[in-house]
Image (cartoon, rainbow, N blue to C red; front, side, top):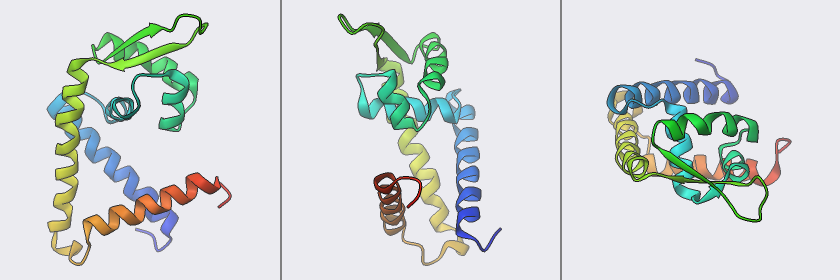
Length: 146
């Protein structure tokens, strides 16, 4: 563990991602990154590859590479929008909506259980979430030099 906030946050995110990935693979047969893509798509669907890439903070190419696997797994449908050239619209299948509706709350509950750990005494989960959301909004609003 580091005494520098940037390293501590990096370590925390890596541990959260690994923990979520284990839970999702064992219980639902999906990777953490696949689940994040579905959960984000659930919030913005129907949408196109460009907007999903922006919401995920990745390139259009990264989303374009991921979409065929999500379609093949039966989680996402695609369609071309008439008159929009090569614009591909993405939507979740009912199976994926059920997955997000079930796995999302389970992940939240599993991470909320961390607050019950004796070493976490004094951490208020709602306050922590609000504080982290505030920092995220500040960074998004001011760009990488903030």
